[in-house]
Image (cartoon, rainbow, N blue to C red):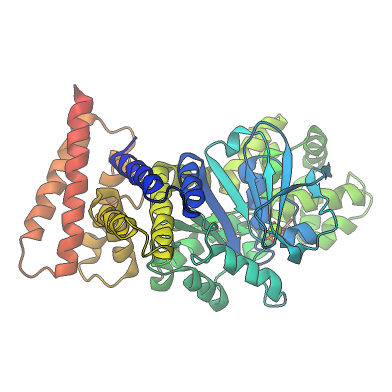
Length: 493
Ligand SMILES: Nc1nc2c(ncn2[C@@H]2O[C@H](COP(=O)(O)OP(=O)(O)O)[C@@H](O)[C@H]2O)c(=O)[nH]1
Ligand SMILES: [Mg+2]
């Protein structure tokens, strides 16, 4: 366990003593339990941004209901466990009720047992699967100006004033940036400890395959757009980066059936100039004349599963001769959907920092508990002590330096600011990621680069022209480099 983990556990142990015999003890126990559990990642964004579809792609099963239906209006947690189970938490009650469910057309169908969506605080789905072992995914209904109730739920859920809800990290989905998306993100963002901000939020340019009408180069265009968004000042301070993902394609790739593969093969056997015209729009593809193989219902189903872009990509892959089985097609589509990249980003930026992000949530929540019992003996001391941890523990200082760099109010040369972000772990916390080197770099190369950077920043830190804020950030970065240098030297032996 890291130093932060040890210190957080220690202060929670102390809190258990301080609050022994009070109602707050339940809360302290809950905080500890959560610290030991998986990282909680919320999927947020507007209605129809593709949240539930992306969740399914991440889980690798068609589990979350998509589109409309009453369960899509309820915050739903998906977590690993030993048995398949769904618990319903009625609004205003801590007592969950086990509810019936079945899977129709793959997606989970939950029987709310007489409750309306507005009477349900959340559903907790336990689903034994390795993909949820280290991460609990939380599907949110999303914001829709037409539906105030669902909007309120999303906000309540992400609101740090709500006791037990904030996620440790957030994936924010947007189809393309609307000013309303931006204000929604800004509403999540604030400087309190557990709030989503540039250190625990990633934006996904979702439904990326639809960019430019699903043309074969849609993902390339989506990449360019994401890059542009990622450089935008307002967005930079809210999220660490913007990645394009075609969630539908990713979901279909992980759940591809042999029948679907054979149908695509049949289509691919036809000459491209025969089929090509029908692939220009969804309507044409569905209404294609009888010379196209497959029935119009089959074609419509394919379209619902792959989208126009996915059908085109699949045909191109099969025709290329590099793909001759369904699993090869699945791998090709996964790669093209952007989900592989997203998995990688989640594992470096979220999982790589999981302990720190969870500790951050725990300390923030403990602070709220102390605040609720200001006169209880030991409460004020506890509060002071946890503040000391947050301000002195290096991983927290690193996150806060990173957030202030991303906020754009620290002045410096662009190149310096970018390198500092990298050292502080904006691309991940492996030595190669901090140093901007290839993953395969040798220990010698990494140590040399770390030493060089260390010198560079120490020199700059001594420069009287450097602002106080920049000095602080540089100090943190120097300390991060020192940590890496020690670890790299130890690894060498
Ligand atoms: N073409 C395309 N359609 C998508 C994608 N993701 C979701 N959709 C479709 O968009 C609709 C809404 O998706 P859903 O996941 O329910 O959105 P949510 O309201 O944000 O949860 C569904 O019909 C999905 O099939 C995508 O990546 N590409
Ligand atoms: Mg949904």
